[in-house]
Length: 67
Image 1: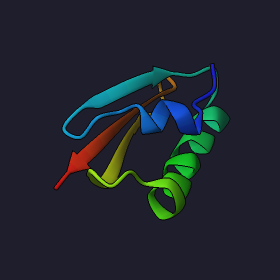
Image 2: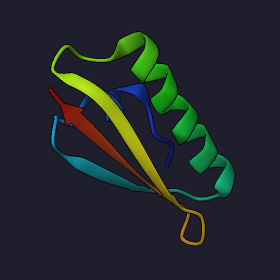
Image 3: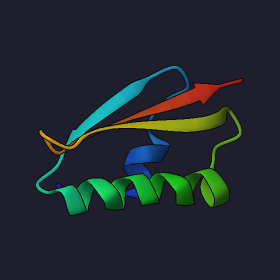
Image 4: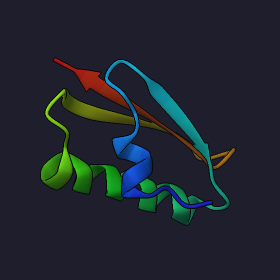
């Protein structure tokens, strides 16, 4: 499974979504994609996104922070 821009944009403010990925490389790609969304495609109702990565289980949790 790969995280897409649409997956990130679907996360509503105040919510967290965890993605179970197949490799550490996919975790790194997901974190990079969050940086892209923050700079280029961030919705008006989201002030920021945060990520937490569990490298042992190859999972990334993305939280959308509202205003």
